[in-house]
Image 1: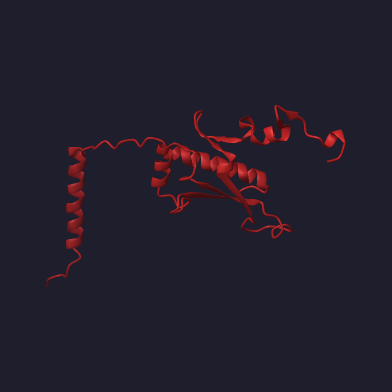
Image 2: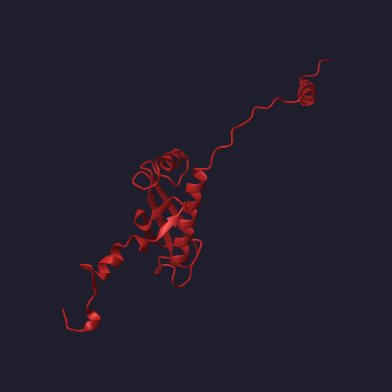
Length: 166
């Protein structure tokens, strides 16, 4: 190490300041699903990819689209959330329980990351909304009568299609 004071890392309580910064629970960026439930950034994997569609001079050089991968089974979500997500019949959820979201709406990687995070948040929130129970209803007498009348009318029309007797 050099003797330059700018290159030295301050030590607090036996730990260097860089160690405290790396592992401080206050510094971990989170995706907040609800006030009680957050997803840590280490649970979400981003992979930059090239966007599809027409481009310009940079189309084959710049990876501005992003694949977001989130493993539901290995996540820190509560069991209820995991169960509801895995039960969804969504093409973005693989058989292994990994959510894959492709974001390419924007021209910059940062905006596409934000878009993918927002879509993940919406997917998790939609999966955990309670399903409104269906209330069985009975058709009214008038609607039943109209249905039968239409059926008889249709039957008469079809009967006219038969061969003519001479």
